[in-house]
Image 1 (spheres, helix red, strand yellow):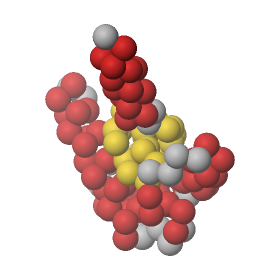
Image 2 (cartoon, rainbow, N blue to C red; image 1 turned 180 degrees about the horizontal axis):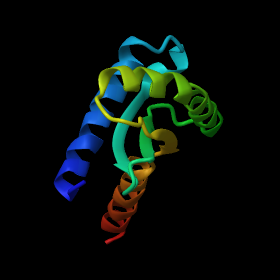
Image 3 (cartoon, rainbow, N blue to C red; image 1 turned 60 degrees about the horizontal axis):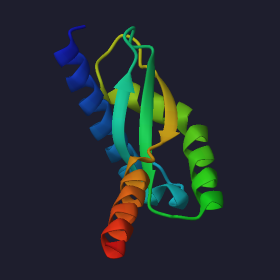
Length: 116
C-alpha cells in the first residue's frame, strides 16, 4: 500500500472509530474519549489508536483506557462491517499525551516569561 493510501486508511479508521464510540458503545465512561490519531503497521495487521481523555485524574484515565481496551473486540467487529478490507486490523489503544505535554510546555514558557 502506498504511503498516501495508508494515510487515507488511517484517517478512515479514525473517523469510523469516533463514530462507533459516539453511536454504538454504551459504556458512559467512553463518552469523554476522542480518537486523535491512528497509525497502522506496514503489513496492516495492527492499528495503534491514540486516544485523548478529558478527565485529568490518573486513576480514571487508566480505568477508561482499560475499558476501551476491553471494547476492542467489539469495535474491531463493528469496523469490519463498515470498512472494506480483507482483514480488519487488531486495535491497540494508547493514551495520547501530546496535549498534556503541550500544556506543560506552555506552563513552563509562561513561568519563564513571568520570571523575566
